[in-house]
Image 1 (cartoon, rainbow, N blue to C red):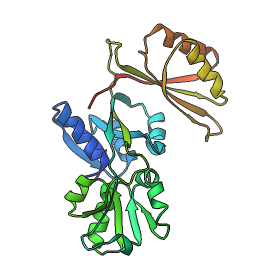
Image 2 (image 1 turned 90 degrees about the vertical axis):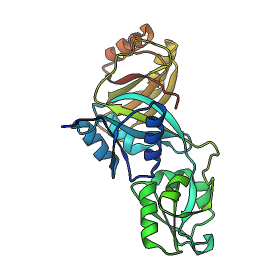
Image 3 (image 1 turned 60 degrees about the vertical axis):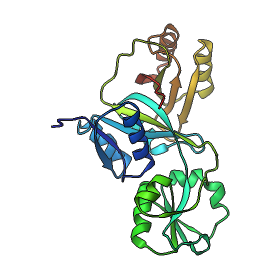
Image 4 (image 1 turned 180 degrees about the vertical axis):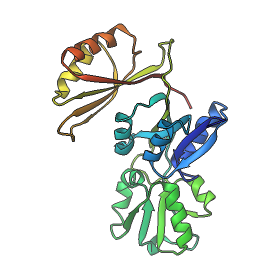
Length: 277
């Protein structure tokens, strides 16, 4: 049994998810027990089994796109989105104190920083990329190895936490590199105020014509903020849609009725207020 509010995130301490969680807590003056996990599946399981009240997960980066692992978990879960906010991502090349860029042979990080720093990494094709569950795990690994042949991609705060030095700053493909984080919970909130809201739907069917779906939303003047199609599953195709309208608006209800008539299964994830953090 949980006696106080618990919030789960991808750890260890110092990860971008940790920074996002702390930013959310500080902004809204929340008091939670922090619960770190080694992977996204454990975060979803923890929340689903009511071992946590909330979770902070990354869903999309403006450089590398949707984070597929969390996207698929979200599409296949019954969890609700309580809100979203953005975190500025400051990727740095980080190593032990005696390391120079010339001595590096291996570099550790999560798959997302590797993708978001791909242009920088093209200059060092001899480096071996080692994938970790998070950037902070990469910091832990190189601090334990403690030689001048390894480095990691991560953030300046985690470099301080693990007593490492920053060799190069701002190595992202984009200068303004942002990741969108979602706040997840088990409970759908009843949003009465329709200002600054977003509705998230997932459409499922064996055959979906992507252009037809888009045209239906456009016909009813619905502003699609984000859309992602997943056609990898031959038995059922999936389209994830974020709309800047309230779920109870007349136009969204008209579109839902049309989609139902086309035998498209609609999974309503959430209607929530966007947060300014």
